[in-house]
Amino acid sequence: MITRREIQETNQMITEANLDVRTITMGVSLLDCAAETLPRFCDKIYDKITRSAQNLVRVGDEIALEYGVPIVNKRISVTPVAQAAAGLHADQEGFVEIAKTLDKAAKEVGVNFIGGFSALVQKGSTQSDRALQHAIPHALAQTERVCASVNLASSRAGINMNAVARMGRVIKEAAELTKDQGSMACAKLVVFCNAVEDNPFMAGAFHGAGERDLVINVGVSGPGVVKRALEEVRGADFETLCETIKRTAFKITRVGQLVAQEAAKRLDVPFGIIDLSLAPTPAVGDSIAEIFETMGLERAGAPGTTAALAILNDNVKKGGIMASSYVGGLSGAFIPVSEDHGMIEAVRCGALTLEKLEAMTCVCSVGLDMVAVPGDTCAETIAGIIADEMAIGMINHKTTAVRIIPVAGSKVGDVVEFGGLLGSAPVMPVNGWNCDTFIRRGGRVPPPVTSFRN
Image (tube, rainbow, N blue to C red; front, side):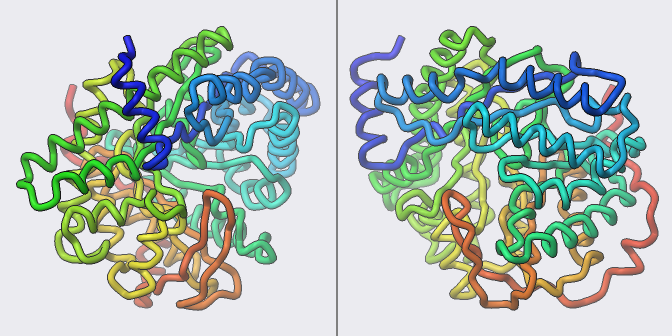
């Protein structure tokens, strides 16, 4: 039961600390849309998505109005398209047509993004996987709402270095095809190690093979709420700090649980998980970097930042699992540069570097996220950055990701405007030493010895 006191606290968190439900995401399986021809497959996926999600936006808006809880986004995730379309033996152009169909369906039901233009290639690639990867640049350049992801590695399978190198080239091509939009296509593309099957957040959302036919997953966010709570315990010891984060995360998760259960009931779709992720926005007061400063750091990136992030991430998870039995997704703290005004300022003043961000990804919930780099950064260097993140995830049995944007025509110090929740990104310097020969070796990096757990 939600008590009167919890309702009062929730109202205060919404009005004073930017608490919101970041997304209600409906997962839709496309496995029953198999067809012998591409046009028939496209018709079937369009029909299923529009039929299943026809009331998603309306219900989300009704719940937001009735409960007074902002619900920022309504989204859809689908079965990884490379798997759903495997029987078609489609080429690159065929997968672009599938992406256009997904985009059309997303517009029809009114969601802001649809995720699942994805492939899982951690151990190897099928013909369908390769065709989808080659299609990604044109698919994202020719659609507005489609998001793509590729899982390149896992702690169980190792790292598919052929796919890592391929994705370096894909990211460069996507940046060039949308150079007139600040290389926007790259903001809708993420690569993973240990991708999860129930993530409601874009760009990495897809509907996993172990999921039901339809499911509702909710992502709730509240870095401003955590910051406000920590302001009340300035100067306290670490035990008090951790307990405050944990208790605050508990309260935030309860809000998400309420919204998720209500949305599932009204849509007659099973409830899946709550993703409690401190996902920042460009708004002042809604920043992970500001949390670090409240904890006692002068700027994000200062010595102690990785420790502060580890404390934050761990206690957010602890508070979440106390509040709900179905915490999942990528729950924890996100560190996207462009979406966090405090991170942007830290980059601008030189406190935060790409190397420090990489260190922080060892303890955050995702990885290098919304990082803009100079347009002349080569594909092999991008692949090297990706390989580093895949290794961190593989060895540490955690999800890591890279959403990097080599902004065409940009140089270090430029600022790229993406707008909305994506914010703006200062172009960061990249280590200029060469890794081409290393990346071009190809093959697969075997999994670590800790993968043998049966």
